[in-house]
Structure formats: structure tokens, C-alpha cells
Length: 287
Image (cartoon, rainbow, N blue to C red; front, side, top):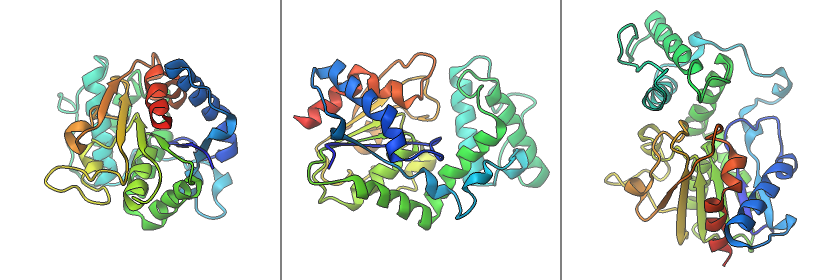
């Protein structure tokens, strides 16, 4: 079994573990070599793939529905969209803040909610970070996160995909974006795993909307430590708006938070993996 397991985030629905491995494994191996000089073999790295769990049986080839502002649900989806909007406004002067004149505040229902969502989608489409995302893809991302957090059939299968890749030789789990939530909860469920190091990149675990729904639930404002992990390194580009909260130590304890510059693609998994800081953290776990 692989010594390092990578857990992907949103946007890999049409892929698979072998196909992802063609890009992800070389990127990780390069990062480890850049950061430590350690040279990994191809079979040292595996990808835990769960992207297809969001498709209903027989619907995979239908693509993403033509979702727009009318399809964003009140509650978790609209709140996550607002968190992204606030983060974008704080990082990009071209993005108006949600409380500026002309915007409509949540909560709301019906027409009022759809108008607010439309304002949010328009604001995000004008940001440097979300500018390449279509409305339907932003709504698709919102629904993926909401479904993982709220639907047992989804989170159970996603965590099971991580478990399939963990073997007696696995020492490091590297997790990106929503995958960091999946991996964190899987590690909490399995303290018996031999994994010693957890490396999160572009992680939204510190966002209250997600943090307060984790399994196990946080106690007294502090999240549970993930299983038998000895070291947890969290690497985040300050411009990564999906992460929203860039430091996890205040939420989870002795996490080593490392800032990183990914250039024009702050949320890119491959750029996180090829970075020396990420490679150094992975190599530390391989001893």
C-alpha cells in the first residue's frame, strides 16, 4: 500500500484514482524532492477518489444542470455563498462587500433570497478568484459541500473511499479543499490507522459553517484531534478564498499553519503539492 494518500477536493467528479494519479502523484513527488531531497517511487503515492459519489446512479453523463440563483437553497448553501462573497470582498477591491448599498442581506426566502444570490454570483464572477467559474459551477460546488455535510449516504461513502487506500505502510494523508474535511473525519473515525502526519492544503476546516458541523462535534470551541496523528501541517495561500479561514491552530490546537504563494492559481492542488513547504511536511512524516 502507498506511503502517502492524497484526498482531492471539489472539481474531480469525472475523474478516477488512476487518472488523478497521473498528475497528482508526480506533483507530490516533485514537491517532496524540492522540499527535502527525498525521492519517492510512483507506488509510494495513491489517490483516494470520491468525486463520483455526488452523482446519482445513471446520471453521471448528464453533466451539471443549468443551475442559477433560483437553485441555491436557503440555509447552508446560501450561508456558504455569503462566506465566499465576504472573503472575496476582503481580498479583492473589485468585489463589493455584501453590506454595501444595493445588496440584499440574508436571510431571505423566495424572490428576496434569489435576488441576494444573484448579487453574490455577480460579485464573485467579477473577482480574480471566481472569475473563471460559471454560475452553474459555483452552485454545483455549493451543493457538493452541503451534500457531504448533510447526507449520510454521501459522507459515509466518501470516507470509505479514503479507508480503501489506507494500508499498513501509509504514514501521511494529504488532503485538499473539501477533501480535508473528508480526510479529517475519516482519521477521527480510525485512530488505529498507522498514519502519523496530516497535511491539509486549501482547507475550509476553520470556517464556522463547517467547523460546527464536524464529526465528532467540537467541544468548547475546540475541534477533536484527528485520530492518532502526531503532526498536522496546514498550508494555505492567503488568496485562497475557498479556505476562508487560513489558520487552523486556533480551532484545533497544535497545528502548524504555513502560508504559501501559489501565484495566479491560489487554490490549485498541483501548485500546493509542488511547493517546498508542502513537500517538506510530507517528507517529515516519512521520516
